[in-house]
Image: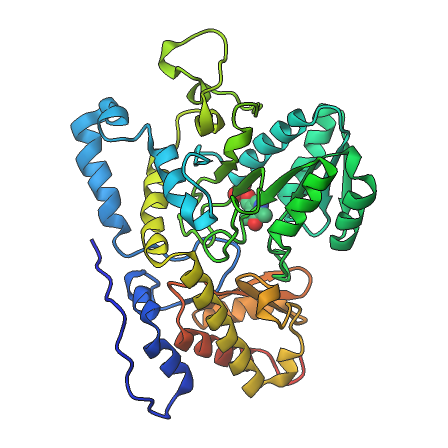
Length: 411
Ligand SMILES: *Cc1c(COP(=O)(O)O)cnc(C)c1O
């Protein structure tokens, strides 16, 4: 069990290194020591940040302790069977949700999105359109295309502005609108509250993919009256390789929501072995089958420090780290700062920044060789993600220094 130091007392302003001072003054800096980064600076935004150093102890407790002692009985004796909902309730405050509305069924983000998309279409059986933003993560576009084929609906893919105007002019035809609060390329935000209100004004279901927001940006699902949401467990939530996704269903929709993946764990009485499916009351109907227990254990463990800090402080820290990146880059290479495709205004972006630089893939590779992990997106974007608890201001400064060396004078 790792214990985290409390707030640091502010040292006297040294007038020395300003970036170092930002770390020293922020009590959240102390969390970085509890992650096993092996000396690398992890700014890679697409997945898999470092584990907490004591994850191995947590897995040991389950694999060496509970598993041999209880074997199959552990599903009941050690709370394994309840873990999808226990983790859901634990995650809920990070999402601005009351308990009983989030479940981690053990599925991928992709299957969870499929489940939610079909369920949303079933809630609006008389409306033909599935509306998706063109800049969506590819799997979201692929699945929306598959769902319309499956259900005989119509797919409408629109730019950010087109999305809003389609809802305004053709909203009565829309069954479900799928959007993300953070553009996975540029980091640009879409406000959840106003977009959800626009969907509801049109009578459509609002389905949010929170993959690039959960754990770094407040998403206020309950106050925004979101209908359905899904998100990835291994990005800012830090659940580890292949961590399962989460599903949110607003309490008011739970009695009527009808998921296509109606497996036995979503049954009202799973162990009655009844021949006909009867959905469980509440969020449990979002469950499917036997969940990947060890992955749930890892995700559960990853959430502890995030909850301890809380979403507002996580967001604050991430913004400040991005601020240090922009300050350092502006001081050393204003020409590279001009290549920022993310909004300059921190209010208008999520937890990452993107630069447009030719040869992005080569730069990613060279940075990796220098111990700085970033990710490139074709053809020429490089993303820098600022996870609040394992990245420090000093690391950001180091990453900018390496970036400036790797990118020649005239990129
Ligand atoms: C990362 C991400 C996914 C990933 O889907 P998996 O099934 O977990 O591979 C899906 N959607 C979005 C928006 C993402 O950012």
